[in-house]
Length: 466
Ligand code: TRP
Image 1 (spheres, rainbow, N blue to C red):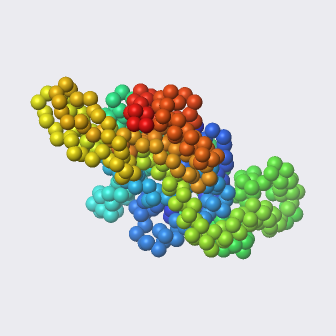
Image 2 (cartoon, rainbow, N blue to C red):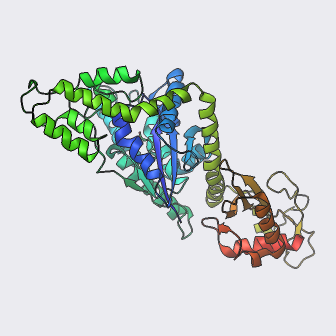
Image 3 (tube, rainbow, N blue to C red):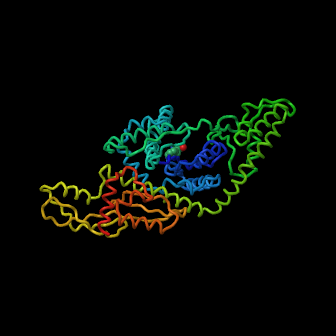
């Protein structure tokens, strides 16, 4: 199975050069690795925790989506979506909230920092703290666990949240997994090799220090103006300079080739003026950023294209999330009444459950053929059992897929992508008629956590109808 990589981008603020070098670029590079399946999303529900200004929320989502696309994220390759387009996320958040110890949340760094600040100021401990802030890590756990992500690339400040997601997953697995793991335990990935870019004043580049170099905003002019403000020592042109440790050199290195790095060092040692070095830096960064900025402007002029991309991304993500949530709902006991009635019926004995007359409704609202449930000896009226259904669909990348979905909506089988609709249709037909016998040849995979016998039984029931 491919390794699943997932990360969220909180949609507040406007991206700067430090975000690009520290997060955007490495994530896009990682998404191009073979054998990974990437999920990147705009954490806009998380943004609501920090910001109650609707226009800023709207603007920032758009800008950040456009930035990632302009920087080369390929939405065909990865699932790129908005957190708030996935209704399964808040649903799972609640399931997780119910098994999360309050004490665990009390220990979250962000919450503790807020309560410490209140205490320091002589305020009530929880003054100004919303339940959103308090439960932030549970929403984040839902983001991750919903897709069974193996790896979660994040900044160091987020590592505690991933650990909490593991804790919560473990507890859920223990309570509801019946011996198997419903959730994969995610690992945080902190890129040690990626440069933390210094800002204009030499401290880490960060919006909160007001020392950033804009990525696209303000065009080449703003880039030049910001670079002019990078703090250097006061050595004049002609004086030999020490390149190591200078912010200008570190920022330069983040974009330069090996040769360019060596050349700048040699020239500074030989007396290159800081002004000239800054000019060189602007040229270098502009060569990288200029073409992306043009794509960014083009996208910002066509927000409907971004909307389309994100909606397609949400469909891709929900193809995974929907069946999985159905399984989780079953695991905690949120099951169709029909299934409970059948279970009671099977148990036999004196419980009489009026199961006749219950419409056997297939998934897409289609009334499916009715099978006879084996009853326990007595001449009970035939119970109607909803059969699984095959569904065929086409993805944004043009490939054709099909899947077998149980009557309760949970995924049983998933095909791989096929190049033509006829091929897909042919396989569906064969699986329907030959049942389990076709399973070995068909381009399908059992859904995670589904056992083979159950699928064989479902296929046999369908084949019996053909
Ligand atoms: N909290 C993360 C941040 O501020 C963003 C985020 C939300 C996230 N959900 C996530 C990151 C899930 C990784 C996985 O950076």
